Length: 127
Image (tube, rainbow, N blue to C red; front, side, top):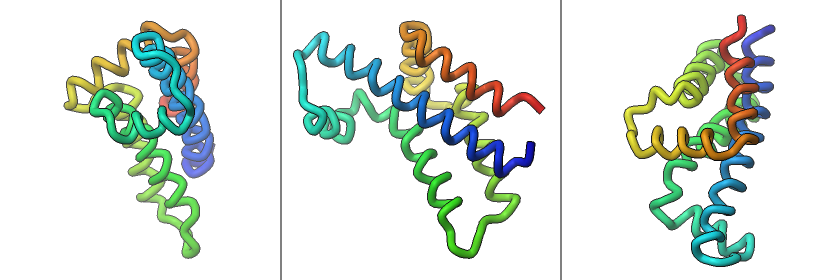
């Protein structure tokens, strides 16, 4: 598989993982604080420090989307850089202990997130 195609597929898989992680975190939040509207939850995601760890996923998705949207194309090196970032993210190589702990907990508590994590790892590490 060409790396640009691998990155596109991995980006789509990352988006699914991100969605399941958001849904999981929302269930936990609402279980403790009561129901919130989608708009309220969006504000919570953006402002509450407990949700900062999820921004690593959304930021990487946006970065990849912006790369593919460039009018003058993208370089092989940029594709490789994003694949490396994705591999580091799903391997939990980040030095941020809070990120690792929250990500690992979500994967252990939510079967959907664990499944998407496995799919993404398969795309990124199968040669």
